[in-house]
Amino acid sequence: MTASPSSPPEHHRPGGGFQNPWPASQLHGFRDFLKWTLVERRRNPRRPDPDPSSFKLATPQFVKPRAAPDKTTLTWVGHSTFLLQLAALNILLDPIWSKRASPVQFAGPARWVPPGFAFDDLPPIDVVVLSHDHYDHLDAGTIRRLAARYPAAQWLAPLGVGGFLRHRGARDILERDWWQAAQVAGGVEVTAGPAQHFSGRTLGRRNQTLWCSWTFRTEDRSVFFAGDTALHPEFGAIARQLGPFDLAILPIGAYEPRWFMGTVHMNPEDCIKAVAQMAPAQDGKRMIVTASHWGTFKLTDEPMDEPPARMRQEWLTAGHSADDLWIMKHGETRRLD
Image (cartoon, rainbow, N blue to C red):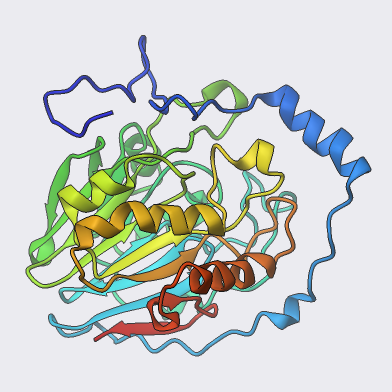
């Protein structure tokens, strides 16, 4: 796949909807899901998880109401939810404050760790960014609360997600296809990029809406949010066209069993490969990598504390500096100097 605006949209499915355009991106179906959950789990029981109390919350240090225009902070709420303070804007990524990543709050994956800070402690939100429509990234209850409390916020979403947001009270909504940009307040250019995943909140609606990554660029800062993705061949193109980056937020969890999850989620080894794809475009510029998509919801079979430990080990083995990897505590704030 090329990133040229004149190339055909290979990720658009003929007849409507969307698809991953790469040969190795074939998704597994419901029969494979049953094989994993009903057959393989009996043969290979899950390895034990730590006690949830081992995940310690940090005290957030983001700036209220806003950070100075030349200051950049990142606070991890949990899973893929971050508060990014950039160019005096408060930007929320894939927000979910509900107790469960589920269509109902009495069943489905529950939080192992509370949100890094309470919803009521949010600063004024200027921009909300969504990567796709799965329950652990697009939470109806949180969307309603944000839309009611911050009616002037701008919303950025991939193609097809705007209707869901509008129905829950959001007003200023911009949908974007891969490689399409938008200008938001504060002079920040936000661009949707490729990701390898899928969409759908019910079995009959798979891939009717798009999934994507996002980049944020100001005159002196650039941030990449990979969203929810497997390893794919376009990380290098993203860095060439939209980088180099000061900060990259990359997923590292929900990866086992590998035969089933490998086409939708990165593991730490894949994360290192994605960084290697991006490295030539960095041209020596330091890029800090922040780990996302772990430690909050039990979605797959690896122990909850394995992704960060494995990521640290793989990072150092690949020869990277420990200072350039941020494995954050829930609620922790870090600053880009």
